[in-house]
Image (cartoon, rainbow, N blue to C red; front, side, top):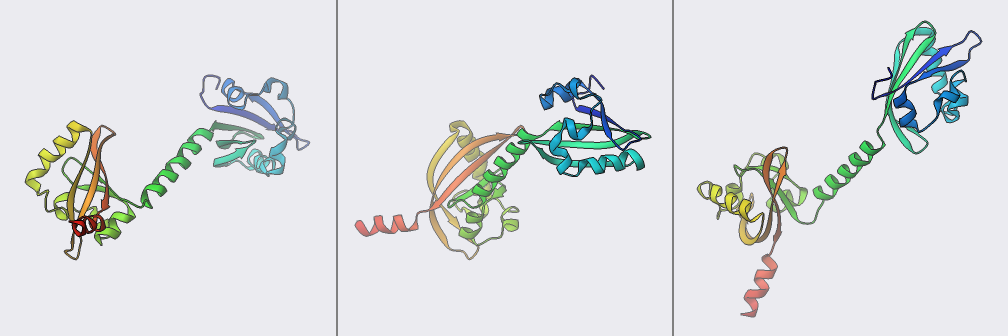
Length: 231
């Protein structure tokens, strides 16, 4: 118990109905930032006053009396988030194993925001693997090309860009990989066969040991028409 990286608190349900804290390992003290030695022998609600209002005392008493377990993946306590499992260890005794997940939750929320922002970006965004297949497309890419996301994820660059047939792709990927970032103009062909000019910004990104092209594209039909009108 003492060597466990997870916080562990132990409790005993006394005959008078009081739920008493009987032990806390070093990890519990570090995670909670408390000198829990002073709380040993005290009621849980006196050591952790906010818990009484959250109904955990009743649940823990139930575990001490009838066994079973109780788990929460995102328990918020005093501006922190915890993941814990409470379970009976013997008659009228139980333990709570927990870890702090505040930072993990923050990262998950940040990733969710990033995903949302990418999905709803005003520019078409494609992630392309070394074989030229799309592994991610955002909503604007689907709208611009008139394909569903499921359709595009079964397609290759050559299916939408006549300038990049399959035989040209290996050299194109190698060039982008060498430059790391590349900007150029090409054309796209949508599901209805309409061909339109685009400006594309390619970046090489590495993820889980694999390399992908992250491409941002913009329809430049209006700009091309304006340039032609000025000639």
